Length: 190
Image (cartoon, rainbow, N blue to C red; front, side):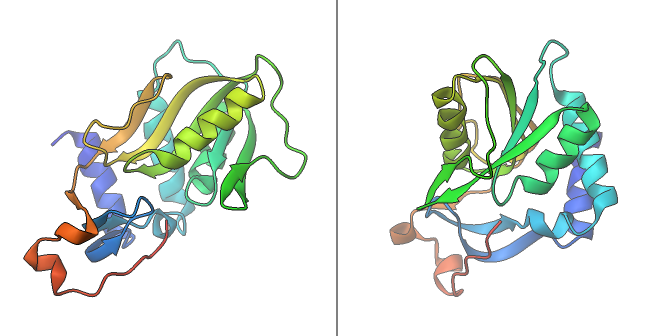
């Protein structure tokens, strides 16, 4: 395991953000592991460090004008990445269960945008954010996530940078392994 991976996992464990049990993911899939990134966000020193490590993994030639994060999971890490980069920060939030720009946030035609998210499994919220940026004429410079648990399945037209790739198995609710069938499922939220 790489030193960065070990440090990230230590932060998640120390803050109680890496959970074990039976979880319903936003994608509808089930898993025996869950990243509760909100627990890390209680500790801003850890958020600062995670953002430093994530920024260090971005390719040197990636530049952006703005950082955007989908609510709720990406809000805190997105803001810290923007702060460290010295960039404008906005967020997308749910409006009738779809992500939207509210609060008079704007994306200008040709504006280069970095999308920052906490965890992806299938990448649904990131895809919605990409569509939102595209619909405003913006250009997605890259997607940066703390944890990619997609097992390489999540792909976007822009480069994807993840701080940690942790591919815990996910299951269709109708095909649960015996170990999960006997544990009540919970949906903790990101």
